[in-house]
Structures are given as C-alpha cells and as structure tokens.
Image (cartoon, rainbow, N blue to C red):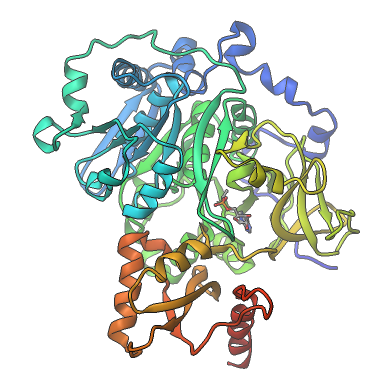
Length: 570
Ligand code: PRX
C-alpha cells in the first residue's frame, strides 16, 4: 500500500517534548512518569492539587492559568487566583455536606465558574459529573437519577431545564448567581462564598484508585452508561499532554470541547493544567469569526479541536481566514471522528500546519493512538499507539489479524487512564473484555506495516455526529413517546460536514398523516426533551421497519444499507 507521508512541521528553533517515537517506546515505563507528580514524594494524592496548587507551590503562582473570553468580556486568572477560588468553593461545598466519594454534577456553560467548580469538587474528593450544556430535561434526569445524584452546581438559566420533581435524591442545588436569582430550596453560591471563610488546606488526600469523575456515554443499546475514572488517570493525561499536545512553558493552549464530553474534561482542563499550561476558554458558540478572533487575541499556540469544526472553518472560505493573524499557532490536533485527508491538506495550505489526529474514547480516559509532532503523518491514519500502549486488530474470535486486515481495534489492558468501572453495571464493563485482557473498543480498523492505524467505522450502531456520541436507542425511545409515532429506527447517515447526521425512520400511528408540519413537531419534541445534538436532522416515514423474523428485533443495519444504496445511486 502506498500512502502519502507528511513530514513534521519544520519551524525554525522548533523542538518537541518528544523527539523520537521509536526511542521513547524502548525505554518507556509508566512508573517513570509517576516521578513527575508531587505525590510521588509526598504520598498525598489529588488530581486537583496537581492541576493547580502544586504550580503555586513550585513558584508559578503568577503565571496565567486561565484566559477566558466571550463576546462581551475577557478575564484572566493566575494559578494563585485559581488556587484561592477553588479552595474557597471547595470549602463551601464541604460545609454543605459534600464528602469524599459523593457525586457532584456540574451543569454550566463553558465559563470560569464551570472550570473552577470541576476542580473544587475534585479537591474535596468528590466525583465530578459534568453535563453537556445542550442537555434538556430528560437527558439530565436520566443521568442524575441513574446514580442517585445528591448535588448539582448550575446557573439560574440552565436550572430551568432540571426536572427537580423527578429527582428525589437531589438534596442541594447550588446556583452560581445571587440569592435573588435563586428559587426556593436553591443555594446561592455567591452568597455562600461571601459568608464562608476559605480553608486553604481543604484538599482531601486520596488514593490513586479513588473515583475522579463520571461521564455518561452512549452505546448502541440502552440508556447512556456512567463511565467512572480514577485519580490514576492523571499519569497518562499528564504524559499525553506533554508528548502529544506537546505543551511547553510558553504555550497558550485551547481545546474547544465542553467538559460534558470527555475531551472537554481531560484535554481542556486536566491534561493542560497538569502540564502547567495557560488555558484559553472561549465561552461562545461556534462561529468562524469568533474562533479565529479567539486565536488572534489570545495568541493560541496549541489548538485541539474536531474534524467537523475544521470542516466548518474550511467551508467558510479564505476571505474570513485572511482577516485574522493566526501566526501564533504552532501545533494543531484533532479528535472524535475521522479526520479526512482534505482537512489535513487545508490545514497545511491555509494555516501552514499539519493537523495531528488522535484517537481515544470516554472509556479509555486518555489518548491511546496518536500522531506526534515529531513524526510522519499519513493522512487517513489516526496515528500509532502511544508509548506503553499495545494495540491489536482482532477478528471475531479474538485472533490477531495481519497488517492490512480489518478487524476489531483492541488495546491490551490495563493502562493508567482506563475506566475504573461502569456505574452499577458490571455486565457492561465485562462486555468490553470478551477476549481476556484485550479491551474491545467497538471500532473497526487496520494497521499497516509501520504500525499506523486506519479507522474503518464502528462494529455497532453507535452514531458519531460532529464527534458527539449518540445512542440510537435513546433517540428511538424518545421518538416513540410522541403521540404520532408507532415505531422508530435511528441510524447515522453519512454527511460531508458532520461525519454523520442522526436520521430517523418512523412508522406513524393510525390516524396520523405524514406532513412537514408533523415531522417538524416530532423533531422539536426530541430536541426540547432530550438534546439538540440528538434530534434527528432527517425524519422519514415508512410503512414498516425492517425487523428480524423470529424475535422482531429492529434491523438498523438494513436502514443503513438503504441509505448507502441511495447515496451510491446518486
Ligand atoms: O468511534 C470512535 C470515535 O469516537 C468514539 C469515542 O467517542 P467518545 O467516547 O465520545 O470520545 C470521543 C473523543 C475522545 C470512538 O470509539 N473516534 C474518536 N476519535 C476518533 C474517532 N474516530 C475516528 N478517528 C478518530 N481520531
């Protein structure tokens, strides 16, 4: 097979934290990485301490840790200020009864309150559960009720989407606003902070195996599952931040994801702060002007985003691009969905930089397959295994496949960031390990002779739209709650911009007529009940859905084939 090879960016005086992949593999050990943490000496473990407080202790208190901006304001926080703010909020939470191991959900937009709340909760040993800001009532209810959540931090706007009446275990709702903007039973954090003296020794010392965070993630069956990580994940999050993000002392780092998605927690907050980076946080929605202007204003050097975002920027054209000075950029990365070679070529042509694809999943806790800045990129490949990570392509029986053969992308467990458990669902956890200690990702891929891995799709029905993971079952369940819908089958339909879009096939109940008005109403029903990103962009009415003859189980694969055939015949 001949593949195009793109050589590393050769800027003058550019050196990378990892200069030689092959050499790093040979001498690599995770135990060596552990020596970078303050707990290696002190025995006192806490991710929040390693992200913020230790930098203050090490003399970097005046360094900017967070540079927030949106269309109205711009605020900078030093690491000292971040320590003070997270200590103070942690004290408030602790005084309000939050203890080690309690789950604290955080439902906030991308703003400093959100980042500070994440670190403050972790500081006192709570398990932080960030919720995506586009979630509506039922997505929130499913997640909080699944783990009997007792605490929630949100704002006076988003709280309107929290179905309090359906969440009897929810004891305290903290609102970031003043008391007059809080309803009965809600606690104003502004007020609490004013009357609470901060305890600068509030940090709870933990074990590496203690729970750190919970991310609900969709699969092809059932409701979203709670994936729990442990504090040990920091070992790998730090090292990938160092070698893959290549964070260096003067870098200004921007990851565009919201913490409700695992990338927005691990690579927008934890990994860069473990590496003492200045993090940029842009608080608005996607918009080419605002994004380019964020890079120009804050002088972003390392930028981690997703293929759909790059494709959207590409589609906006050159005129807008030329209005901004993007020369600060030195290292670009992508994650979440296949990075098509055209986008890599656009990056080289228009931004003068290669885009480095990376692969991982919520369950893996950190990047596992990567393109390093010092190494050759093969467009179309997700890269090679990170040092210390062993990858195999297995067939249906668990036998290793030769180079070039497509099979199940599998990783030898354990690695430091691998999930600790699936919340109250051991069967689900075990389902990833059908072949002993090989973790089955659910992705299909092949590996070439030089170790590069090429993504080939999913082995199940999970949908990936704009890098966001959507479970068809969740959308189908919502659709059939609509009074006009008798049956529903949901698939990912290939889409040039979003990778896939959510497409629903429905059968209407007797007495209902197919009309644009009804279809629009059904789409909005999903949008406003579940979440905007999960609402079908296309809804098609069928007389009946394809099902298995014996058990009557929905055959999504046939719906997918129907779409593929249409695309091919167009
Ligand atoms: O199918 C793969 C796809 O996203 C899935 C994981 O989704 P999630 O848990 O939401 O995590 C996303 C970001 C960490 C994978 O099973 N995926 C992730 N990265 C890539 C990818 N598909 C193709 N190329 C990638 N680089």
